[in-house]
Image (tube, rainbow, N blue to C red; front, side, top):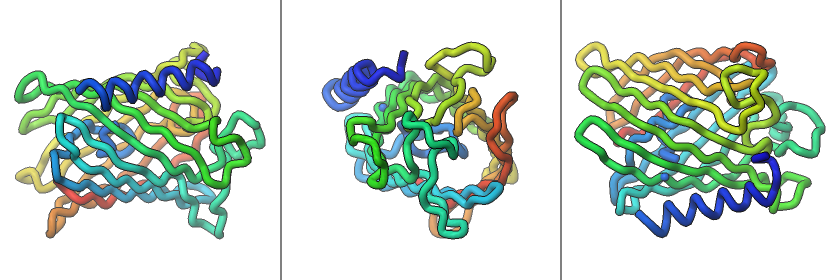
Length: 254
């Protein structure tokens, strides 16, 4: 099982060896699914997401730098809750020792392989911990994924698979059919330009009944000074107890 500590450590070490020794989490996202847009060498990327749902307003912040050789790396501050001062919470609001106390501080990295002008592959990882967690720092949160991206003037489509432990995603299934206890799930995101590419329709989906298992619909509007405002609504997957809510994102465009 992916939840076993020895296998978790092996997967993380192996992934980061691939990323940093050989040639892969584009932190740029549609809303929740990584879009796998590459931050080029010397460029800086920033994205601030705010989610409003019942009894909480949560923040996710992402900072990334292009470091060359088709690699980007950075850090995240995830799931900070600002409503009524409730900064601390568990990922499924339970007291299970298998959960991570949010917020999380994580590192991220992604490697990109360009196949053609319109097609690209990537592999990425996010890993970190909560400074306020009562568990050992060895019980870190982690997520790994691989994506395929198709990008043209009329459509951007990203699809792939992911796997993550309960400290990152919480308990719950990963696969679209909730009765299948697969450690691997699927993620899909798309973006369609409208109004002379000044506005884009966005949708994404992360499978499973875990804490990140939602689908989202919305739009993005270009603002002056290379900024983008995105907004939409998110909804729980079938058999999930996740709340529905609204999401806003402020992104520094590349």
